[in-house]
Image 1 (cartoon, rainbow, N blue to C red):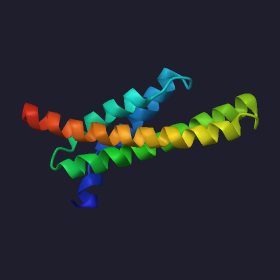
Image 2: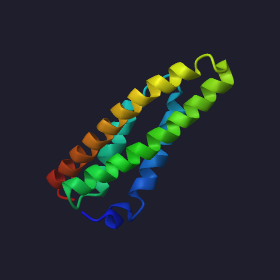
Image 3: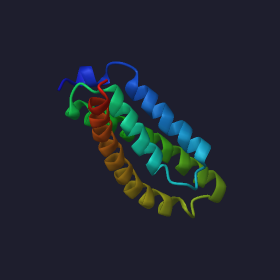
Image 4: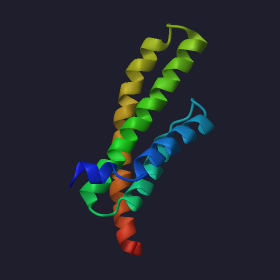
Length: 120
């Protein structure tokens, strides 16, 4: 597993853009967990050389995508409600990021096996 090979190509930036767009379209009140899982599956299908490569690429995509969406939501909460809800938002965001990372990585592994099943 070579990190240069994992980050090569457009799969990771495309996945990050998909996560951000689905977050913005779904609204900040809904969970993006299914979208992160679906994006992980897409990344796993695109990076189908090795299962570990698919999992790491999906993890990187989920990490950057969820951190960016968390920053967007923290800024929106701060603008809307001030610092009253900011402490709550920051504490609950850490748990959400962990769930999103797990879902994205599992999605990458599922995507790898889907690509091998359909023969891509």
